[in-house]
Length: 216
Image (cartoon, rainbow, N blue to C red; front, side):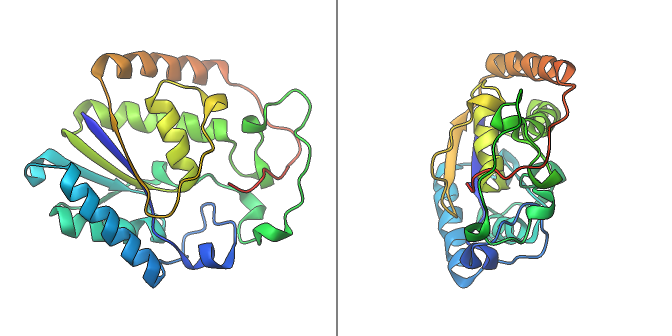
């Protein structure tokens, strides 16, 4: 099976430099719609076969849903929305300009990925959320599964699919309209499912005081 991870096109809040998190309403710009069309054309080349061979699921946030609508039209498939593909929730930080953010120390005893910045979600929370999603969706997925999501969620999803934990996420650049394609083997998926369940059982931590993670 092949999983295609897609970041939404440029949004109005991307242009303004605001932290979006799980804020619903920011829409695609004209550039964002072009990026969605470019992603769709790339996916058309990477997803041979009929519509039955392709599944398309997106975050329910407007910027991702609009991107997925463009992709679905090109691929000739319907779009399913799933809240599990939302961006990392950033609590009271959402809507803030990134240039206004001030770095704060990570609370003692926690890794930076285990802090719930602004009272939202930690990266560990996102990793657990995606683990539950993949365990539910992947066993019955078609040969090609397109997931339209957000920058940090895409990075965490890629880590999960590679069998890595929440502390081992790659924070490389993921531009708007970015598409990454991964081959997922059944044996590796079973191993990762066991890892994910073990991590959730072992995770009873609560993060310390609200902090600000550097923008990514």
